[in-house]
Length: 439
Ligand code: FAD
Image 1 (cartoon, rainbow, N blue to C red):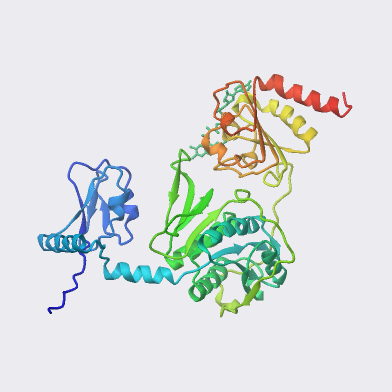
Image 2 (spheres, rainbow, N blue to C red):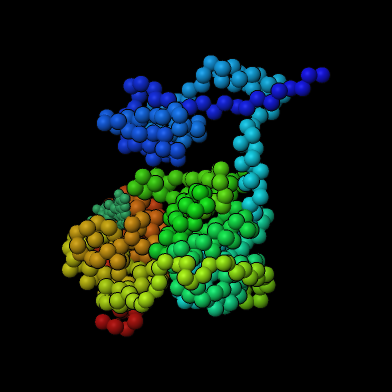
């Protein structure tokens, strides 16, 4: 019997459909990893078919469906043959490259959480991510591991286990005493190459954003920043949800072709897991061949943040009384400060307030401000734009005061008061003081 000849599935090349480009701002050019697209003076793409590898990314990102795949007549014939065979066998044929990618992806197992710390003092987001990671491992049936890098960081390994990690990869050396991008990203890439995790979670802090970007670039893998939701789909992919297009929509992003799937998550977005000191776990100690003399950056001095009057711990506060444009003027925030003082809380605000220069940016809650998760969040004269909600909607109790009963803030509020803040807030302060025997 004649052996069936294996035919490679043609990938084609991208081609612009004349007259359809809307000059959206060079999304196709940005999506091309092979620099095969340049823009002309009208903002339309010029596609270099010599460089195009037929990955289809530009086709997918084009909002006007102005790019299509082009196949030569010979390639079209091959595609027709493959389609006929697939119809006969009922099975989809995959290319050699696709088969190799799938095999490589299968080698990656487990969910990793990077444990951020400053000279051994852990960032709470790391533990929150262990909580989120535990949910993912349940669905995937894999191990939850933490990665601890630093100098004399044994305590953090034990803490990781108490917060749910079943295995800790630790690199403990004076080279890692202070965070330096080069040393840390090389250490993580070393571990990833050796142990191949399928998911890596990192806190979206200043340090975490810096590190995650460097690691993802070095590993040529996908990174979704500032995720507000993580889940696993039926095929085992990580569903990474985050606000997109200025927060007007929530996008769910998948990293299909590369591993690990990397996400950063802001502090206070995920719930803290329980702490159990009796939990047992394995500690894997690794030594990375990185020498001090190879690191270009040296830490000469550590300067702590100034603790001025503006410096309040908004993210760590149990009670936040937040004001929006409905507060009308800067001086009216004194009233919110009184309410916050009665409740042992702090004052936050919306971006509109920062833009009006009524409050400093450190007080801003939301997508471009702080993400908070207090026990009580009181929103006063805040409409509840999505960019504000993503920063506070996971608060335990939300009390909204707004004179417009249609305001979107009421959709996330536990208790809603439709009324004038200038009547409601003084009434609340009065009532609290009376209940405490104060006048
Ligand atoms: P408004 O939307 O003007 O709402 C004022 C509310 O006060 C109204 O609902 C009104 O009914 C009520 N009100 C008026 N008078 C009274 C009264 N006497 N008593 C009771 N209620 C009263 N916003 C953020 O907050 N944080 C962010 O991080 C953030 N990031 C953004 C990022 C991007 C890319 C973009 C495009 C926008 C961002 N915004 C952010 C802005 C956001 O879209 C809104 O414009 C902003 O949140 C509105 O602030 P506000 O609710 O205070 O004001």
